[in-house]
Image (cartoon, rainbow, N blue to C red; front, side, top):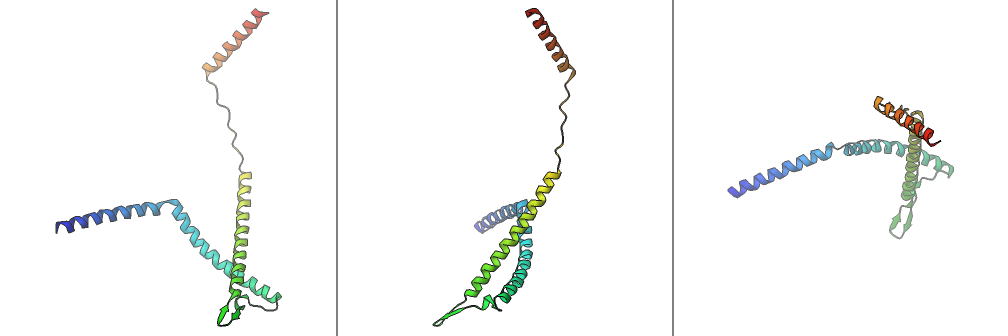
Length: 150
C-alpha cells in the first residue's frame, strides 16, 4: 500500500511539472504567432483554392473545355490519374504566386514606412561649466606657449 501511495505522489509531481512546462510553452509569443499564422493560412488556402478553380476553368476553356482532374491513362487494369497531378502543380504555382505578391506588397509598405520615419536629431550634450573653464585654460596656455616660442 505504501509503494502505491509513493508511486501516486511521484506521478502527481511529474504531471504538475508537465502541466507547468506546457503552460510556459503555450504562453510564449512565437507559439501564439504560429497559431495565428495557421488560422490565417487556412483561410488564405480557401481563397487560393477558389481562385485556382476559376483559373483552371479559364485555362480549360482556352484548351477546348479540358478538365485537368479527369485526365487519366489506363494501362491494363491500372488507371493513372495524371490530371490530378497537373491540377496539384497548377494549385501550387498559383499559391506560390499569391504568396509572392503578398510578400512583395508587405515589403513595399514596410519600405515606405521606413522612408517616412525621419531620424530624430540629437543635440550634442551640453558641456558642464567645469569643462568649459578647463578648455579656456588649456587654450590660454597654448597661446602663452606660442608667444614664448616666437
